[in-house]
Image (cartoon, each protein chain N blue to C red):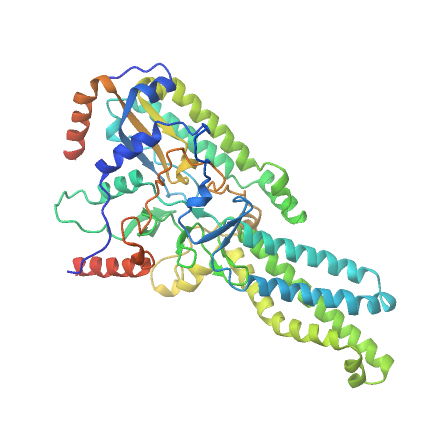
Length: 366
Length: 157
């Protein structure tokens, strides 16, 4: 049997520390040390700015590239194409372009900077309570908690998995993002283009971003083609026209290559919204009828309009991680981090630990 | 043997934490926020079943109201979309208003019902909406006998 590095939580050891912290009131009493905020000890791989108001994944991917591409393409459009088109067509072209550009930038920033629906990790007491309920055979040899729990949702069997990092059974539709090291509710995917996970709280921003970006790229593409046609009529030939407007050709190339993927992505996400699915579920085929079982999506309202309204116009849940709240003055961080008692060089081996525990669990059940 | 506490301050200062009971989420209706109303055995001698069930059912109703999809939430969603979601920075959403109501309700329940029985409910929002945490306190004066009884009851499960 492999030596599993998963540490069982001893409730008796916890009770003394939690008694101490729970009996103090976090009312900002003056200490010699500054009162810290919760974002400063957040265990996930996130970065916080503006005193916790803005958060990003630590690996922000190609977010700067996304912003640069959008700003440069739009900038070239407003500088080189709009004056020509205003003279020859209508003033509404830069107006529409401006509105779309503002929409794209704002929704992009909101997708990137909003908490996607991160679940805070279980406190030691809670984690110990879960373990007590699972390990109620009372055996003295320790084994890790079983990995799944089955529940019925709308008469459909759904398996809830146990998250070794966050020490809790994940709610339905929640998944653990390995890049951000957080469990995210209604996890869709981790998008490198926006540098953040897409989950319950920022899915509507993400959808608005890709739809408005699809409109913006199509709009710029169409306007540049129009400009090219009008210019070639004026300049007598398309080659001459291309030589006269090099900036517009740059925009044309960028738009041409991005339009396929963005339109495809918008179409795909429109399908997901209409069927109340997440990318994660669709890729894994969780509710696919090909599985041979009598399974369908238990979360759908069976009506495209209701699904769209529920996903996009539903109530906006609050952020659960309370990043700007103050820590109690005796501030031992109470969350169980996966590297709590491991030496520093082991801190990066969370995925290895989970794999070891998976192997251990499999070997136990074999 | 119910220990009598007259207010929350007295509870915090003169009692020691004996145990914590966690009420888990009930996912049978999907991902909406709803807690199980099953009465935990640890609270058997501390509080009446009906009072506990009323508290949890009222909380479930509040959460259902917050997450209700209907006219008002659509209006909020459409308005938010038109203002590029900047409206979330300015106004308080219906969900946030209901959460404040829930917080006041829990405070009131603690003061009137739970603290006199040596119990304290923690707002689920502080636990990531995963559990309702009920802290069970024992009077320090009688902690020797009562904590002994609580440990024997937990090991006998």
